[in-house]
Amino acid sequence: IICHSTNQIESFSTSSTTSAASSPQPEVSVWDNVLSSNTRNNLHRAASKDGLGHKAFSRPNNNNHNNILEQTIDDILTQIGDDSKYVEYWTRQEWRSIEAHADVDEFLAKTQDANAAAAGSSGGTTTPPSFRYPTNGHVLYLQVGSHVQGPTCVFRNRHSGGDLLRSSPTTAETTPSPPPPPVVEPLPVEVITVPAVPGRLLRFQGDYLHAVPRPTDVWFLPFVQGAPAYTPEEEWGRSVVLFNTWGEEPPLGMPLDDGTIPEAVGRGVDDGTDDNNDDGDDDDGANDLGIRHNRSDWLEAYTLLANAEDAETSYQQMSLDNEEEEGDDNGLRLPAKIWLLGNERRRDHPMRTLKLAARESLRMALFEETMVSRHLLDQIG
Image (cartoon, rainbow, N blue to C red; front, side, top):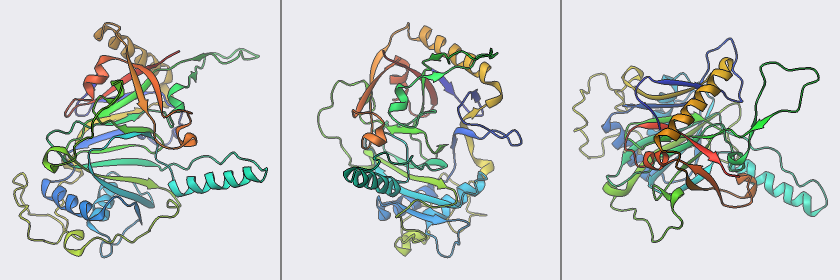
C-alpha cells in the first residue's frame, strides 16, 4: 500500500505533455477542511432541493443571480486558481454504486451515437467521433453517514474500461536507426482511493476513469445479494456536490445560468434551522455564504504530479512501489471484477465487467475512513 498524508507529493510519468514554461498541474489533488460544517449543512439542504439534474453556469459569475451551490463552486475554483469558463454540476445524497466511467459531454455523445446509427442504416460510416471530456472533475463531500465506506476511486491515465486492459509502449534511452519495433510491456493499472470525508475536496484530470463501489468490496465479491439501505440519512447518506470544468464551450443540451433553487435555501438565507454549532467557528469575516475557510485554511491531503521530464525515474519508482506491495502482501493476488458504466462505446469493452489482479491492500483501503492511498493492479493474461 502507498499511503499519503499532508503535503506528500509523488511524481510519475504520464502520456500528457506539460509546457516547460509552466509548472506541472497535479493529476489528482485532495484537500480537507475546505468548508465549515455550517456551510456544508446549507449546501446539503440546497442540494437536497436541487435533485440529480445536471446544470451549468458561466464564469466569472454574478453573485446576484447564482444559487449557493454555484457561488460555492465558483469560490472554490477561484481559490485554487482555476479560471475555467464553464462549470457543470449536479448533486447526490445517497451512497450508490457508481460503476467505473469517465465523464463526457453526455448530450453530445448521445447525438454522435444517434448520427452514427443513422449513417449506418443508410450505408455511411458508423464510427462516431471521439468523446469530449471535461478539463477537471471534482467531488465536494458534504455529509457522510456513520455506516458509509464509499471511497471515490480514480484510475490514473485510464479513460475507459478498455484502457484498463491495454499495455503502454516503453521508450528506449537511445533510438538506433532504423528504430526497432516498440517494446510493449504491461504497466500496472494505478488506482487512487479517496475516502469520503466531510469537508473534503477531490480534484482530478477530467478524462480519468473513476468509480464509487457499493458494497465497499464489490470488486472482490462473486455476486451481490439483497437491496442496499439508503435511510436513515445519518447512517447511509453520502451527500456530495459533483462538478466538472469546461473550456470555451459548455456541455451541450444543458440548462446554462439557470441555477434555480428555492430562495430560503438557495442563497444561504436563514430558514429557521439552527446551524450555529459548527465547530465553534467565529462568524467574524464570514461572507454571505458563511464560507470562513479560505485557501490558507485548507489541509493538503494528497497531490499526484505528472513529471514529464523524469519519466525514467518515475517508472523506476513505480516498479519499486510494486515490489514493496508484493512483499507486503506475500505475492498474493485477488481477482478483482471491475464494473463498467455506459454503452459499449463508452465502456470501450464488450462486457459490463472485466477482471484485474489486485492485492489485499487495495481491498483493505476501500474500507479506510480517511487516508488517501495509491494502489497497483495487474492485467491478467
